Length: 216
Image 1: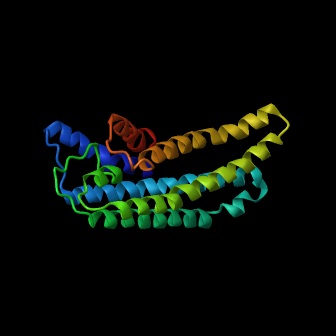
Image 2: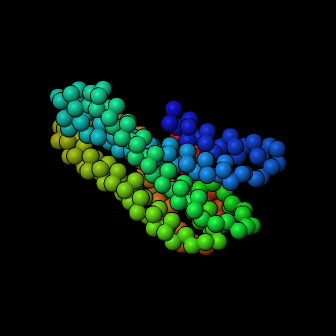
Image 3: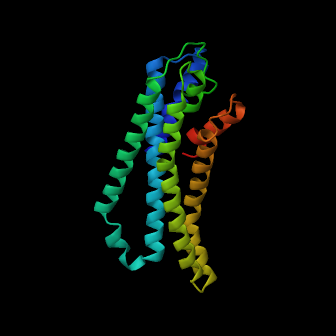
């Protein structure tokens, strides 16, 4: 459901505009798209962290897994993911709505996102950029650190397994998760940590395809 949501926020509207040759988006629709994209991507961010914790418990604490990852804890993790992502998305949407856009307002992208909107603003975006870096550290830095710590423990536990078949089986349960984590955080950091760039190129649209289609 999360992945379908991430795709549905951006791709259908882009395809409709291409088909009807209407390459415009109303201001309200742009902010709505921005909000839901950051909401769903934020939930993904925290769920990937919860999945790393799940792998840690399954491999490092297998005897207590059923009690430490019971249905109540799962619901708490999901609820916290939604709450944190909602706060992040709402913060950025409200902050971007305070900027003034004087025109010409041509977004060099196929969906509304913060870096491209910052480029169009005729008012100062310094506070918005500081907010993006600050909240981004919480939204990405903390989960990345927790995932890294989890996998250090997982790797240590797997390396203690004597049989090669056992090590292979344990690592195989983590490989798909690690692949998505690498693509999700890699493309995200490339997209949001280079706000000083004066011009956005087709590379940014390619990274946008990773964020909105390939990762989900």
